[in-house]
Image 1 (cartoon, one colour):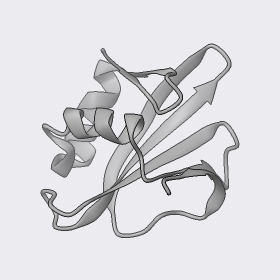
Image 2 (cartoon, rainbow, N blue to C red):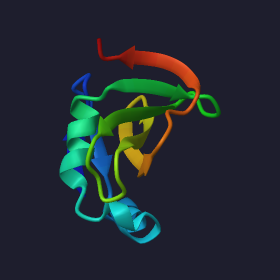
Image 3 (cartoon, one colour):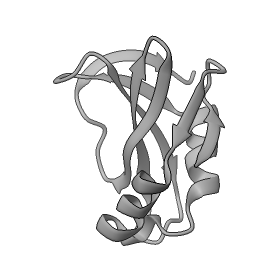
Image 4 (cartoon, one colour):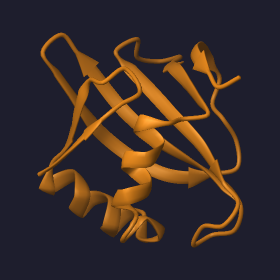
Length: 104
């Protein structure tokens, strides 16, 4: 298990099972753990999921990725005593939802 801190200094964990999911279902995420930590700690924006109010999506734009210029999206379940990564992927767009924070 890997542990990160988000921009609010909350501990966010990435379990071995979820890491295996990322590397299997999103092969472009292989070797991207440092960017996951960077995105959580210093995102461009954070959005609350439109379908699950306990999920926050952390986005950071990277000009160079394994799949060209893309946003890295980290999907985090935020519970009262636990925060953990559900998935992570590169994407062209930021999903709609409540804007929780945006870098100025």
